[in-house]
Image (cartoon, rainbow, N blue to C red; front, side, top):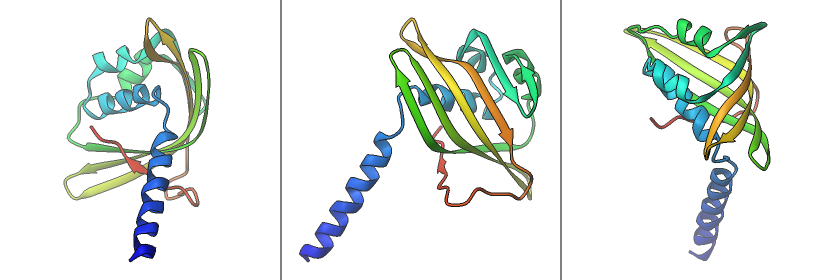
Length: 153
């Protein structure tokens, strides 16, 4: 009985420590991708600074370029993330993470995975994205030993 209690306590502590590894600023990234899933362009714009740039698979985009790509559709997008690491220095945060999206439409489903990094700055008390870098993995390639956590909308 004591051994079972110890194992459960250890599992709880491990789960808690993983939850603590997620920086507060990552909520802004969550907000951006939730808005993309809902095709909410206004909320997408609210997550970035005026000088935001996205380095998207070899191209330089603004938030307006991203908005143009996120068009209302009949698919459902479910987001998953796995944070690799992050570093915060005052009001500036850099974060590296895996991003997975599952696009489902009727009986079809497609999974897309990106390796991403982001720079966020605290502006007037709010964390905003100033830069993102996104590299899409080839179809069917999944990174080894990565545990994705489904985004809660």
